[in-house]
Amino acid sequence: MLRNLAQLLRYRALIQSLVARELKARYRGSVLGFFWSFINPLLLLLVYSVVFAYIMPGRFTGGDEPKPFADAYPYAVFLFCGLLPWTWFASSLNESAGVLISGGNLIKKVLFPAEVLPIVTALANMVHFFFGLPILAVFLAYYGAPITPGELVWFPVVVAVQLILTTGIGLLVAALTVHFRDIRDILTNVLQLWFFATPIIYPWQHAPDFGKWFLNANPFTHLAISYQEILFFDGSFGHWRWLLALGAASVAFFLFAYFVFDRLRDTFAEEV
Image 1: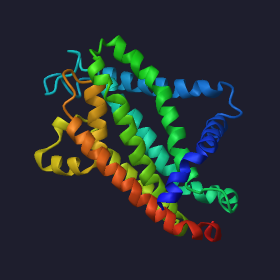
Image 2: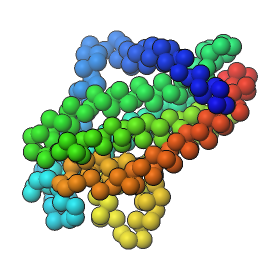
Image 3: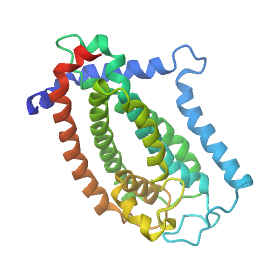
Image 4: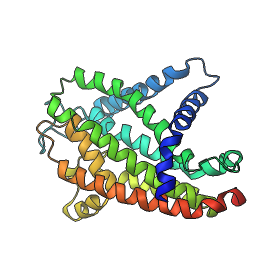
């Protein structure tokens, strides 16, 4: 397993090429092409802004701890701080579930490393996440978010932890779905439940006391809180211990997922 894992570095040019192909294929034939990567998050944020400013105003106030950066709680921006990374996470898992089956022609080739496909899926969705960040940055600047360099230093750490966790789960889901096709449908429903069990549409502080234990056991809770503390809430980044613990756990889970993937590797060509 470790030998195959080490050989992944040899395939970095292949991964790069497949990520570029994936990005081009997503908008092939559309008039605006790559601009949709910016337009989609912009439209999403505008819709949330209208909904929570005019249709459902005052959903959360600024009186909770930690305090938001503006007196008028910009709920749409708070929501977008968690929704953007969640979209990367959920899209990667949904696409990973079928990536080995749809890429059957590739993995039947003897020398093609099958683990490249779920890794490419996670990386391509990470690029879309990056495309949405300028839109979020514009709205944060509009509301005068006091983001400090000390907090921004942690941002790439949060992204790296999410990438490791997403890739690990993606590898496991991709390998298991080859043998158990029902996982794709189960995963869709699990992700819906997972979304509402993560403090994305509500602040963590608003969760009931008995629910906070479950939220702490949810790995994406600590990613969402990290993004919100760095980008949205005022004050220093206090969730760093949880983030580092999640990083260590994500590395361990990635190795476990790769071990399972490696053990099932020889069966993929027969099943797809």
